[in-house]
Length: 371
Image (tube, one colour):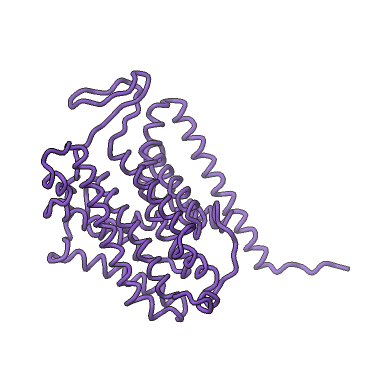
């Protein structure tokens, strides 16, 4: 029996996909070759870039966790999430610069060591920004997303884009935040250390570190510790608490969750608040690291964190974390060794590669769509 010939359009689609995969495989191979050559030429410089990439990746991780939580519950790509990150950054800026919230413990207990006082003050600023962002996301979800719960998904997506624009341009008003770039006042004194063949120690002002050393600061340490702590806290909430069990039930099957007596609307609102709290913490850490805030600052980190969530497997908390670390490395290494203007293009090319090769992501699972 003669086999039926395949439609020419189908053949073209299949060939196009194969050509696309081959193109990005070649680009990836060239990038790996370039990075391998850089590692062999100057290992300390390469490792320094890896440290810088980790710092950026841990910040992206906190934003990506919010994306993956919200998508896992309501199958919504919340494009306003990056702007909640921006609000968290501005909240911490005003809390530090105008209200000296980072110094409350030192003011209350003058005899306390400065390091301990600054640490407690920094934690307070982060928690304050998390609370403000959680309340903001809770309000947005109730006002904008809840009425569209049973509407087509495209309606909620367009609404998310509209909210994103509203937050950006409303924040640019003079009586809200500002449209200017603002230098961020850090809540603690920056300390820098070196580690390498010359040993380990603190870098004094005006003294160069030993040649071949890796440099890192207390900013890097705070970002890493805070991100890992919040990751484990989120995992504990999702896996070990009553509200976490409700979240997993709602994510799996909303109608059945309602029949079991779960308040689905409340669970969704709490999920938005939790994701926004993580974005608020990320906004503080990002501002501390790069020492600048402006009303458009949430767009690019938000999009890259979304790519990280897709890369890791959207809906998977560990996957989002791993994807964010990969994104941080990709951006930093490509800027250092390939081209600074190309770092964003390379980072977003990862999204195309993932969608072509493994659409479910590194740790994602193919699941049936639930209403």
